[in-house]
Length: 247
Image 1 (cartoon, rainbow, N blue to C red):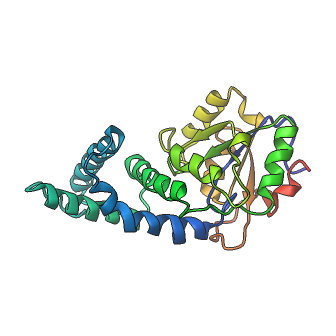
Image 2: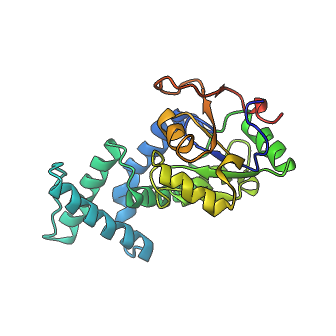
Image 3: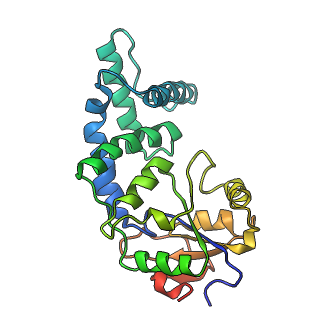
């Protein structure tokens, strides 16, 4: 058996685990980059978007202080402020910064894309049946991704297999912490109200498995999917198909 009983919850990564990496990097990221200027030009920005922009201003200041040479922000006029903020956001996107404010803003842009029908998330063929099987076994399913909770919910609500959100009980993002930080998994264990040994974590990134395994006590599986990036070798059990997990 890949995971040892009792496992009462399965915590899943998205990119390279439930969904091809190409969808995130070749569809979602370019979609947000192409539309961020138009999105921010809306005449009445919501309070949540304004909060994202204020947080990005603070992040920019931190980048300047850290001598990271971010693009300058220009507040001489509303238009110059918009253009310079777009340039900074694009700079962050190129670096795939795990910024809570950036991920929140991207999620709001993707929301329009999903609702308009321009975006449809692919999931691997084994995912829907596994979700149904695990829930029938009374195992909870939770998601932990660098993308915002909104982005996670949107992705699983608009998949090529239909709406999978009824199977998912919890979502965790960068507001919980970094995926390579053991403290994040301790917080997730507390939130799920389960001891770590009763949570199985599946990811395609060994650094994330490292953080969840020995320091915290999660059971972990290394997910190998076609197209995933090579990872440093680790002694973790490997899976390529969710049908092998609690069949």
